[in-house]
Image (tube, rainbow, N blue to C red):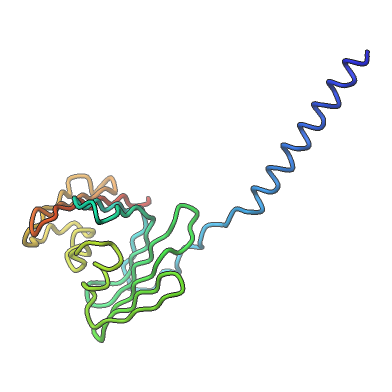
Length: 172
């Protein structure tokens, strides 16, 4: 009889500990960032992106993203798996701003800040066209839009070196 009582107490204690652990974990979780408010006439894309550069000095980039605007003026937000903002890149004809952590950098060149953010040059203007299904040519890059209807895009840079692969999966 004592053994049954002790087993019941242990199960109760373990159940209580497990419930407490779940409450603690739930309290530590950060809710996902609310979806951006759609602005009338402004194109928006959300999903995940991965950039792999064939250079051991360049870390791979894998993040959620929110892209809005156009090649001339827009915003790119990179998100971690919990939906927290890793970095925000905004650009207009007057220049570009990169906010990453507590740091804010400005530059007249969007390309310079994209390279600083990702470790590699990316054809941002072409990216907008590609996401709309237009396979515009970019010297050194090839793009595969064959699965764009499934929300998938792959672009590869052969030159200039190092080679790079950009993969995008859009949210549906």
